[in-house]
Image 1 (cartoon, each protein chain N blue to C red):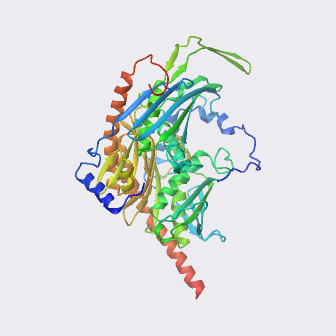
Image 2: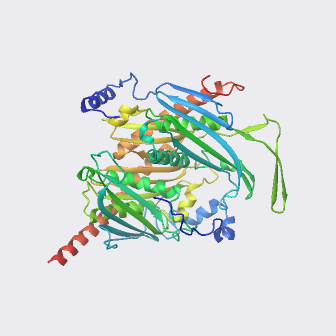
Image 3: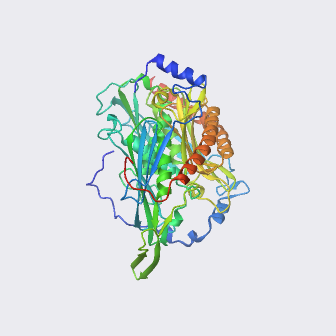
Length: 283
Length: 278
């Protein structure tokens, strides 16, 4: 997206007046649409649409061997796929950098055991554990990917059902597991403190959240704040540009408050989802 | 970087022997208390004290600019090469690009690293790029890219910060136009203590929480000191807002402490060059 100087000034003035180009205030989000359990082959899935950004997340769970240095912990891995459907820029290897940036930020945000406790995924110390694959597919890009992706990931993990292990038999080097045959006999993952990311953009003298593509182009610097409960699990700067330490602190404060509100809103939305719903797209 | 399948990568499944040592049975709290007691750390530093730094320029004769840094045990070598046209790019970009490659040497860490970049190294490369982009006058070389290669010879903690400092110096040694000198410091939080310039042992201890509810985590900040601009900020762990704010202040101060050293190294390089040309 290319903007001329006049358009940039228009966006800038809007932010100064606390009345952005789409009528929002500086701390407002665009409307979101969230669906869960839409991929039947996945253990949990979610689709989030934030204005023009569309993200589909599916969770697959497999049995693996724990890392030798962390025998008590399971594993979680994030894969981001920037499909060329989203924008033609992603064709070939074009989206690779963005994909790496997104998956790295997610794995650092989920790194602390306070954000997401991996020890619950351990089946047998040093021998067997669950590995969670979180596959993120970007269907459409309309700015503010970090926020959309983190919300969708949290919703998909909330939706995920971990199979219940009834017993583990150890016979020498052989390990056999008995998994409950009841289809609905599953565990839910504890995602109460899973991080939610907020992108804070600095435009002119003010900071805004949830920038659209035009606003992203006008920003002089932006940071991503991952809020887990009432704490920060990751803060990182994105895009080119530098910030004054005072601005940095202020944008972290803004991200922190907005993140908590967003987390609360997501939690309430998740509680409203009925337990047994049909699986499929375009309901 | 393209993956080279012809290289021998060593056996796939090996475990470092340290994991079998009895030391590992100690709880995290005792391990941490051994590392830092009453504000004095294992190596007799105060919590806000840097390790001894050695830094020099012009170590790689083939590169346009290069530098070598030692932060205590951490040893990093960085080389910067002449700008070249951005490969595989059809459109014209108004600003030049920076291409960073951060790599741990296979023998630099307790666990052997492979020749190809793993995800941690890719992440560090991205952070390095982010930090250096705002320090370099990129409009001076449109449609060109500058390659920066950082190789960690020994990881003794704070390797990323060391690489960023050295890369800043190597860029100025290469004569790449820059706005400011860049310095970077890593800080760790654990059990209510804030430790500046982490060693590898402290780094691993700061990553996982100790039983109580205090903050834990690692913060890396890079600063352009004359302009008072934070060019890169990265935090992991689980911190309260107050802690992060305090860390930011501590780190800005710590970053400024290193600046005179970088200036001196550059001045020394200039004096040497002038003497040689007479």
